[in-house]
Image 1 (cartoon, one colour):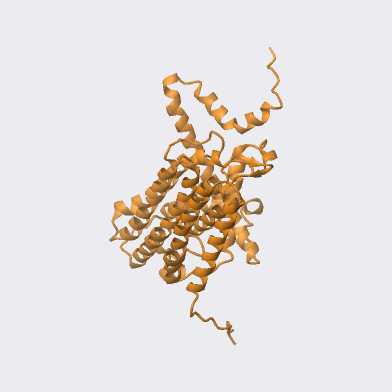
Image 2 (image 1 turned 60 degrees about the vertical axis):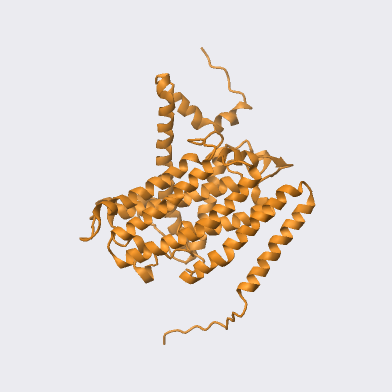
Length: 401
């Protein structure tokens, strides 16, 4: 008996929901009472497989990208175009000796990298990676995500304190100070989105941005308050993930390697993995809050699967991280802290007021003009005040004879 032909109108919907349909097909072989739990397990397996695979590819792309920026070769010996380099790195990490300092707190030293990876993975549970593709749909999904990301600070301090090494402890204290300082504007920049969308549910926040005016989307980044919130979020996210120019917790030239100085082998690989997973996670939440999540950038592109747009936006964010690493120099500790508390936080608080003004002024061009003028004016004023009485002479370069 021949199957009925699939309608051309239904085909994009089937491709969009292909992973959901595949999961439902797999769990259909199980008893009805087992299906909800089996669906969650399959979702967890997918997350645990997909994002580490993206991590492996990203390490190659980052090395090649940085090599291109610095006029040198990236990995090019292991496999075609060096694409098998992550496999070699994984084998090396698994076979290297696990060295634990004699005076270290062995249990805490062991648990720190595991705790870090687990808490980062937990954040993926509430991210809507496509239409109907959130593993767990919580009414307070945004709150859950940030509660999980805050737990990483404990893991970092566990690693530095348990090593019984002054460089590790200094690196851990610098990392915790940095993460706490930038976590405040990170959260406040997200509050602006909650004020406009009226929900802490991540799928509902995406749905609030899914409309179009003509072919152009209603993403929050295309509003004055949304652009300001996004820029603050991007700065704070870079500091939260310890990426350049905010990579002070590792500070190789100052404190050897920071909080994971005394880690080797697979434990160090877990820290490395957690850093990149945190990049994917924070990029995913940024895409969800400001860039429409899984919605298409133009209305006529909605035929493309929603999960494609989500992962495309996330990978674009990752390449911006890589670009900044190859471009910007590392800040000093005092510059980093002053920037957080004297500029980023006050500007974020002001933006919350602008967001409330935008919400209650109603539709029309008046709120665009008023909100834009306030934000630009305060930005310029704060920049002038911050640079008052600071004189920078011409740079001089000295070369060895």
